[in-house]
Length: 217
Image (cartoon, rainbow, N blue to C red):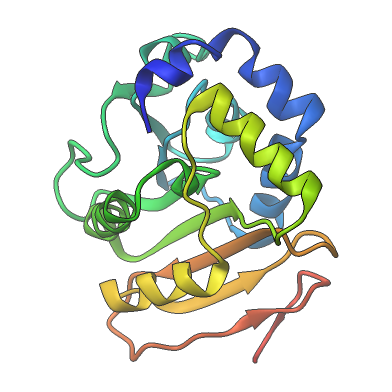
């Protein structure tokens, strides 16, 4: 992932995400369904870009910090009470155990696999005990139209490295996350949500029903 690639699309990024891909609507719906946001919580939005999601939840929590490589994207954040930091998610400039929730929304597939590992390890480090990682991402099955979309994405913002949900869950488990949950926000199953908790429990993987109600696998 290159900050320069996102610096070139910053002016139209919100429009594309909101009206074309509709990622923002899906992400906010999933946050409402699966995260119990509280006024005393501190949230870090890794790769949060323009701060659209941060601006949408800031009134529900104590603080939101957006970490992103692109200065131009961060400059579009409109709330003075949101902290924006230009930086890499693989080296989050905070001490251990600071945040209650970490958001990674459509971030991992813009990173090489070694960087994906580093970002997830950093996410684990900066989360408090009982803190949650909220990861929404994409994995397209092979097909003509999906190949066209991936090519368009690579032209716009650089090469992508999409991971299937089972690989993301395995990475989280190896890092030390527990209570790992999986949900699909629509029937096509190319967009997925993984939530993992930083606890001292034994590793446990469960699956959320497609209806978005919690259920054991």
